Image (cartoon, rainbow, N blue to C red; front, side, top):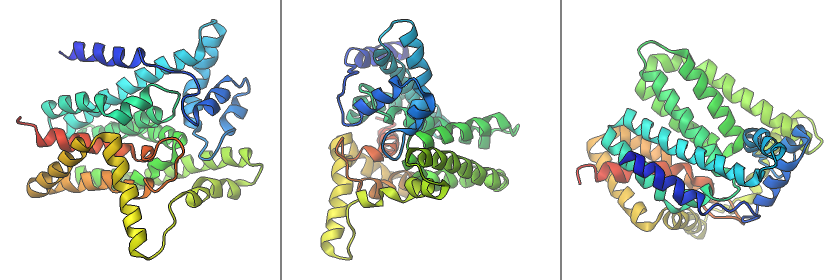
Length: 327
């Protein structure tokens, strides 16, 4: 069955790949990948630069170009592989947290969630950062549960998180989830890791700010501004009124419903209630997994509303599969 699932997954993606200028950002990514100057390719575009996407695919794009094979098409083939690895490591993470049955159902369900399917098939950076992020969380949990204190796991988790951050700075909103999972899994080891974690965040910020300073011909502080402050003007305006509260609620809930389907979203609420009654730790983990979307879904987007809250899709899928575990 698993082999059949893998076959269906790859066919479902490969027959629908579109390497043209499908979405607003696709043309920009294709132009940057085609740039022969690697540093220039990393530092062009709009903030956030999504340099992790270029860092991941630029070398292969040039390699396929060298062999005379359509590099844009092959980039999407490789993106499909990353999508599969995202599902694979999500499976391994849920297996680590719950059991194999829930993990298997989660993998199947994630593969057919509309927004996840869509981002797999076009030149977009979302599949890339989701892969780095979920794999980073898996290796963090693997490290914290490992009796041998294997430093390879935490090193892998750190490097993967940096790549996720370089691909999309929105992952910083899910740091509280990482902290919660770490402390509730292995408190003593987590306390020892805090200086390392701060160093990883600082390193990722420095690299990102440096690249942005090159983009906008400014100094390092200017790069930090573009990294952490420039996007505030692109969110829905906030005022202390009932209207603003309702608007924020609309901007939060509607994208979750139509991107993930309303059936999945409603069942996820029931799954959250089940966890609240039976497993408080998993309940709060799910809350921290979904809560950042209240902010990220306020981001004005000419491409696809709600796509900056994609990380929460993992939580919705997990909540539903855990709910119907015995069905």
